[in-house]
Length: 267
Image (cartoon, rainbow, N blue to C red; front, side, top):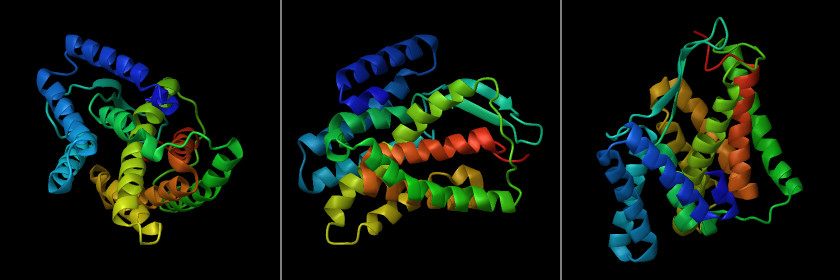
């Protein structure tokens, strides 16, 4: 996924295809899973290249539905590789299981391929990115982690457990990049400029944050609310500094949670 930030989509596709071929050989993905990925890609391709009017809208809706199903791992054909199996990073932490997903990242890959130019601006300076990130990151740390501490969902527990680098790479490349490409780049940026061009910037921002909260239903109402708050912060970073700012805000927040506090929460 990271190669797509340099607009080297050919290299991204070569890496992606190699990964899916190996996954097919090893049984981590089936023909059914590949068919769903191809269908999702076809919907977006047709919507941005050939279709217009109600057909284009229908293709975009179909793409969004397929993407959300892939995000929530609800489509068959995927046997994602499990790298953490009910691991407790600290004594009081809840058991944590993590997979290297094959379904969700595909959405990010095709979004950068077909729409990357509409939401990725390369000429942001380091200073501009820091300025875009600083306020939303501070606010969501204060609210989300602060509330979690007050409610004793988490504790202050600095650590760097075995396997941390796998978690870091997975969270950056397969989580933050992919989720920000969809929720901020596609939903807030691409659709926001088309449907809400006469509205304040925060209208698509809040809608994308709401959708971001909805897809976190597995964590219950509390996690959905915190995801909405975090999504609002990511959306503001995107508004100020583009997709790179929202990715870095998202990843930095997750990384601070992982390294400094109970992860994913107290058991």
